[in-house]
Every structure is written in C-alpha cells, then in structure tokens.
Length: 303
Image (cartoon, rainbow, N blue to C red; front, side, top):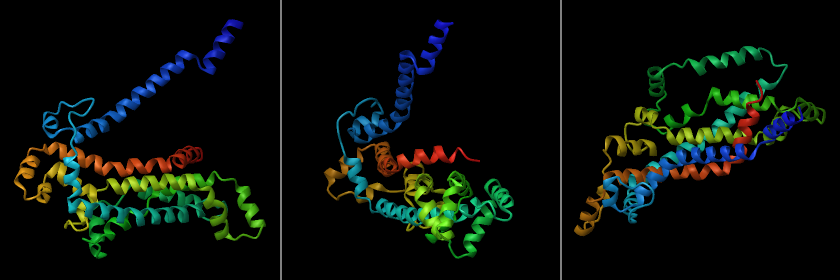
C-alpha cells in the first residue's frame, strides 16, 4: 500500500517524465503555430529570385526589403490603414459602453422580467435578419457608401453582453450593498465599484472587437463600393485574390529600377503585405494579455 501511495503522490505532484513530455508537446504546438508566419516572413525578406522558386524553408536566401519599400510607397495602402484605424477606435469604445450599460442592469436581482430579458437576448444571437434586410436598412438610413456603415453595425454584440454580464455577476453582491450603505447611487456604484473591477472582461471585449474590425472585409465589400473608405483587409483581398491593386504604379521612372522591380515575385509582394497588415495586431496583444487571460478564466466560471 505504501508503494502504491507513493506512486500516486508522484503522479499527482508531477513526474519529471510527464513534465518533459508536456514541455515537448507545448514546444511542438508552438512551432506548428508559429512556423506559417515565420515562413511568410522569410519569404518576404528573401531575394526576389529565391522567393520566386518557393524553396525557402528555414532561413532567408539573400536579403531584400524591396517588397516592403514598394508597399510603403503605396498611398492606397496607407489610406486603407487609416480607414481601418478610424473604424476600430470608435467601434471599440462604443462596444465597451454598450456592453457595460446593457449588462449591468441584468445583474440586479430585483429587476423585473430579468429572466425573460436574458432569454430574449439569445434569439437575435442565433437568428439574425439576414444580409438583404441589413442591406436595405443601411440604404434607408443613408449609410450606403458611408464610413458609419462600418461602425454602427459593429457597436452592439449580444455575445459580448452575455460575457460582460457573466463577469459582473461574479463580483460579490456585498460590494454593491456596501456602496449603497455608504450612500452611493446606481451610477456611482457602476463607475466606482464595478467598472474598476471589470478591466479583465473589458480587455477581452476590446481584443475581440479590435481583431473583428481589423479582419472585417465582407461588410465593406457590400456597403462601400468606392475605394475611398475601404478598410485594409478589403485592400489586401484585392491584392491577394483579385489582383486588381496595381502596386507597380508607384515605381520610379528610372528604367533600371523598373526592370529590377518587375523581376520581383508577385507572391513576395503578397507575403510582405501579409506581414505588414498582421504585425499591428500581434504587437497589440501583449498589452492586453494579462487582463485577457484573467477575463476569460473568471468570466467562464459563472452562469
């Protein structure tokens, strides 16, 4: 019995073999996850002639930033960048405000019809009106070919409200009662008690919204027929899929430079653009990582 008990304790506490296997599995999953992005990166900085062969697997063959230089000189891409940031900032702020204002009342136990409202919120989450009614609504509101067509529809999410409600419900009710005893009204309780404690879930909602708006292109393709207000992902789609964006229009008139750039692989330009458009999101995530993980874990424990 003593031998079996000691063996169970070693298994429960974690053996060296199990630790090594877990680390090896984590490293393997990390390599599988990161290699596609690394592959795109080394192709984008390799020599154009080597990139054309598509036989670059581990380290860049040669070194060239000509594809990035060409992208930097493309004014259309910078306009698409600015449009995307213009959509992200107000959408994220309004999304956070609507989630908090809609979720906080649903945590009040004495609210009438609270269960009915909670059940009613599930209906539009699973059954939407469809693309045609949404398109007709956008046209009737005068938002067709207008930047607000990318902001207003993305400012409200039932799923984010449910996540926020679940997190706010995990905050002890005693804090609300203590604030009420101290003379705080509903708004003071929300702003001074609940909101400071809601940083993790707000970070989760912010990350979801930023990534969602950053990757959005379908609504822009439907509601923005002209390229003036189109976001970055729709521009990227034109380059990668439709090949309608003429990146070579920014070339110098110098014949030698023009010939050199003509030798550049089209795929290398696409890889460079993928890196160029993905890097901001990858750089933003570490700033939200601490709150993001905490919000996911705590928000998943309730209801």
